[in-house]
Amino acid sequence: MSLDAFLALLVYAFVTSITPGPNNLMLLASGVNFGIARTVPHMLGISIGFLVLLLAVGFGLGAVLTAFPALHTALKVAGAAYLLYLAWKIAMSRSLSGKGEVRAQPMRFIDAAAFQWVNPKAWMMAVYAMAVYTNPDHPFVSVALISIAFTIVNLPSVSVWAGFGTGLRGFLSDPARLKWFNIGMGVLLAATLWPMLR
Image (cartoon, rainbow, N blue to C red; front, side):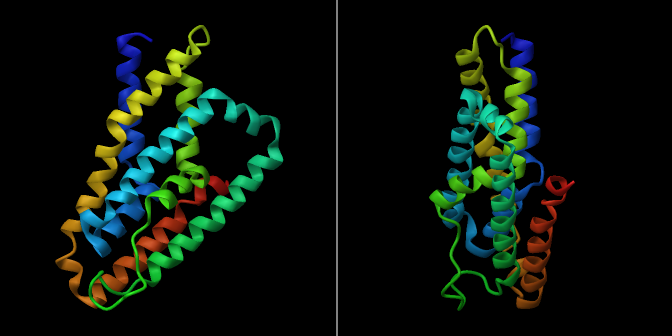
């Protein structure tokens, strides 16, 4: 891969990692509700989970899903159901952690990593990156370079969203504001399904 191609890949990785999507909306909500420190496992789960998904797509999983459309459809349905469940949980959250809502917990590392497998934006990012930036003459090197590019930009990008959410904690300490913020985040998260349904 030429330097120009790698730089283009870095730009693609940055733009797709920092723009709104299910992961970033959940991190924004988590930053508000739990603060940055308790959101770190969620951020790491996204980055590591996406890296594993990227490697799997690069080494042939994308071809398997193309060959078996029913499996692809099942993955989409499972992803949509789980995303709606998460949207509901966010929308119903009513207090910042430590202020009376004992059952509310930030997303765990393993849950965030597993979510990448049903996240429509993560699949789109991985499939597109592998389709555009791999070199058939050097598949292993290409997959490695794509993985390195996403590793460099993904964690800092998603951290911005959690940090922004943490910065909003003071403003959203008012229960009415927090209620409407969480409802809005839940609705926006559910709305990220729209591209998948078309």
